Amino acid sequence: EAAVTQSPRNKVAVTGGKVTLSCNQTNNHNNMYWYRQDTGHGLRLIHYSYGAGSTEKGDIPDGYKASRPSQENFSLILELATPSQTSVYFCASGDSGQNSDYTFGSGTRLLVI
Amino acid sequence: GDSVTQTEGQVTVSESKSLIINCTYSATSIGYPNLFWYVRYPGEGLQLLLKVITAGQKGSSRGFEATYNKEATSFHLQKASVQESDSAVYYCALRPRTGGYKVVFGSGTRLLVSP
Image 1: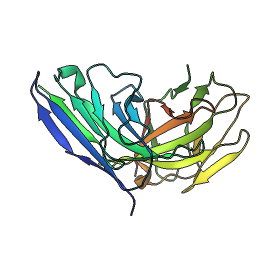
Image 2: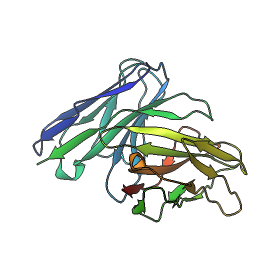
Image 3: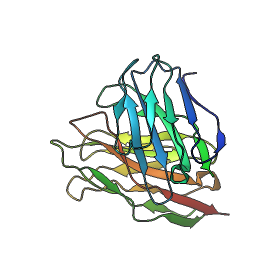
Image 4: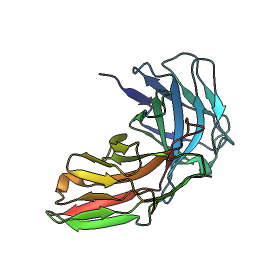
């Protein structure tokens, strides 16, 4: 069954440390997305990608980098983690078509102390 | 820019009662956007509940339904009789007709169904 898998499910990081969140999809979708979800906010787009080797800035990219080394994998990198980046992160994949929808991973809960 | 508003952060409904979760949107792009409801059950990722791509039409799934009202710019989610298993967080979302990569989500409404 096609799916989006995120790892780790939970992560505790120290302020100033480097954190890498990983996402793998078996849907063969071109597009992949990273969102964060905080209480009182909708899902906010951090970075996205149109395909292997491509990364684009979303609405809140500051403090984050992204890497898309292959069709299947899309990583979110926090070079210098801060407590304000404590959140739940969701990865999603989707086709480029206007009427397509997204398939989401189960989320990564990140706590930066 | 485009936006989606869900006014209720949490809704509590007794089992077998009816439900309505409000959603309004603002789309600045040319043309009518696609509208979606996603649901997130505890410990899981978001999953598509229903979508409507044509203004004026109704979408339905698992007993839920939502009508795309372009005049009121609303897409309220309704269910006639909720079950305890419907307890989850519901997100309204839109995808504009131009710049089509970017789905915009509302803040979510947590539904608690009491037995």
